Amino acid sequence: MSEAPLHAKTPHVVDARFMEPPEPFVHTMEMLDTLQPGEKMLLLLYREPHPLYQVLTRNGHAYRTELLPDGTFEILISR
Image (cartoon, rainbow, N blue to C red; front, side, top):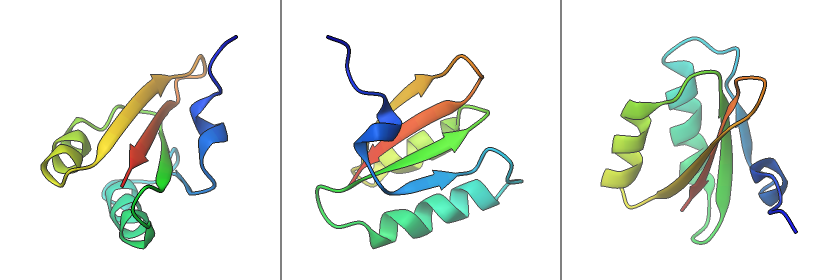
């Protein structure tokens, strides 16, 4: 049995695939501020956000990244 796709694991989604920087970062931080402990959010991008990973790690957030066949990076972030 395969694991459910990341997008099926949370109702909190930021689809930033067509946003210009710094919008993806801003929207992600705003969404993280609304999450309750234990909640997750999903960020969708066409590039891997290495600077964001550093901020998430520094602020105690866990994340998991999956690259989809269409080139979308799904980043599941836990509060």
